[in-house]
Image (cartoon, rainbow, N blue to C red):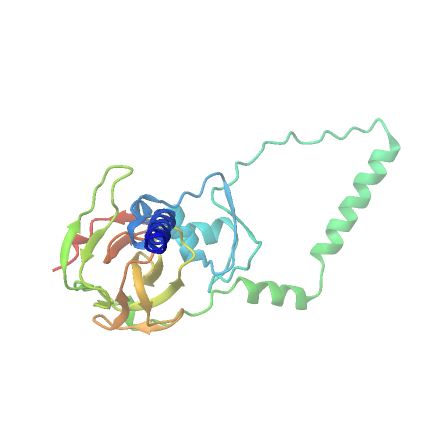
Length: 274
């Protein structure tokens, strides 16, 4: 009997210890919904300047700031093809010109008079530079001929994906600035119109794996939250060409976020789609 009692006590203690240890086991990761609010994160470029990060393009910065890329290029004197580099400071607003009172020169001092005369001679010497300088200046001021590409013709739009529209464009300040089209992971994402890839990456917080297409100088389109990107920057694409596979990167749902930007401002895609 003592032996049986000992066995029963041993089994009871083992079960008790096993139960305690199982209660201390962490909950499965799948039960911790850490990405529920991922789609609420927005891109805010505050202040009057932005420091370029690796992977940025002028188009992605303009997209984030909701500005026309041409305006940023003009403000920062960045010529086409708008090459920027990490660490570069991009001004987001045109600096206000400070008024300076003209200096008053008097003849009360011989020293100031001599200084003025020297400056005048120096200026005259600069104006009398050889013809070579004049030729270089003329060449620099000439506008390079622009080759018209196929995407500069009149735009026609198609739906970028099949699925159910679960969120629509809202014009209010903090509203959703596009269409959310839900479908299963891996569904085809198409170029809504012909254009050139000006951004393909995931550096824009809140958009996940993102593609931005430039259709002409006025229109851009964006395709966010993809699982796979199938195109590269500077690649030309045709309307209806497969450019990505639908996913849920930086989002709580598997869906495509589709936006159209006109001169930097988000517009309602429904007005353009058939």
